[in-house]
Image (cartoon, rainbow, N blue to C red; front, side, top):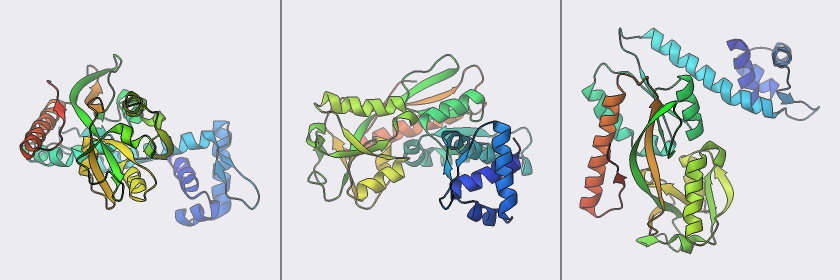
Length: 312
């Protein structure tokens, strides 16, 4: 496959319209349609279902290629950017992280890290837990933040903390102003969460916490990240169980309430490829631990819910 073919395919896959995609690419529609047909012939599979007078739809193969093609094109852009302003003998530290870490932790880590390491190059990318492990395995990121409890021998894992889960509730919910809520009190609610295939272990911990409280959560709604999950809660369409770090993402219409059940916790870990850590991994990990300890101390001093920092 060529970069041009992937660019054409992604444009059609995003717009689900050959006409709109052609206009965005500043080309006529027939050559674009022909390019997609040639790509399908090259791959030996259909990428779109086409019917007269209806918008094209992605096949399962098309959905897979869309996800991977966008990742490939993004990595090409990053590589070109790095080559444009490369700093001699400085290799960028590429960090993949789940949305709660990106929003709730890294803003307090990256700035002091960059101040202390002026020549360090840092690239941060939000991704899902399963995708982060795949990126680490193929070498497209150097360090990942996940909630997995264990990894195989391709990786090294350092457990950072146990985070309490908090309940994200609509601000007109009966428990929105309570100091805490028992999971059993949410048994009749609709829950909003991420798709299990994106992070099976994290998903199962949420479900198991509810089961230990006497019910199996009803989950009619799924969201792609913390922001869309919180927006769904703000719409009053359900409640969510989220890790402590997610509560640092303010959302109008949402209240974060402490979960009273002591078993409602989820781990936070750093993962990197076994035997080949980046030169800056140790320094970055130290900055992460410094921030986690400082945050716990601030929370305890203020009498707030906090996380348990695990020994390194």
